[in-house]
Amino acid sequence: MIKTLHTDNAPAAIGPYSQAKVVNGILYASGQIAINPATGEIEADTIEGQTQQICENIGAILEAAGSDFSKVIKTTCFLKNMSDFSVFNGVYGSFFTSKPARSCVAAAALPKDALAEIEIIAEV
Image 1 (spheres, rainbow, N blue to C red):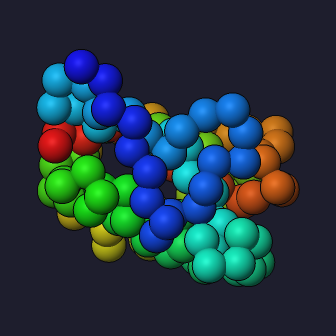
Image 2 (cartoon, rainbow, N blue to C red):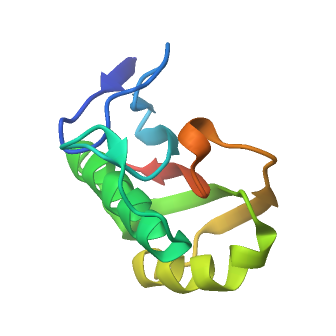
């Protein structure tokens, strides 16, 4: 059984996709950028601020699914500038303390000109 997940505490999808799907106890979340769910806009203009907002959005999706950061299995991270890796890692590491498996790549461009995007797979 596939369950589509939606929470108002994370940004609404800005295209033909859902925030997340749960299949057989596993949460597959769409990539999150630094959109403030209250305004629908990216407000932070630094990698620190955007990574903080992204992680807060992911936290809201995890909570809506009945999960949390400790149950994240895998992340895929996209950075507009790989030179932001160290600073990104500092904020990322404060949320993903269980150290899930991860890939991190540079992306030429991200939606809404975001500086970073993170997608996750987690146990529910």
